[in-house]
Amino acid sequence: MGRAPNTGELIATLYDEEGLPVDAISLWNNLCKEAPSGLDLSAFGMALEACVEAAQNDDLAGVLVLENAFAGLLASVGSTLGACEAPHRKGH
Image (cartoon, rainbow, N blue to C red; front, top):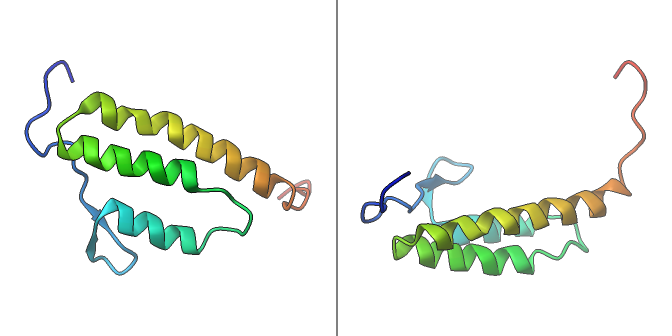
């Protein structure tokens, strides 16, 4: 960016599956309900809450912390789902 964020600039506008506006925490909670059992989503949930608070305070560094939490979430999902995936067939 090269500059301090403008007031409110870091707050994302999100929409649910019906196209209605939704806040990040509510959207995350809804997605968690659909997650595979056994998947620990708590670390990302806490990071998201901290990110939302950082965004509300125009704290770019606090928002960017979510990137590492997302990488951790991807690793967790990959290891949890990797054992469940069927082998790929040639040509598919």
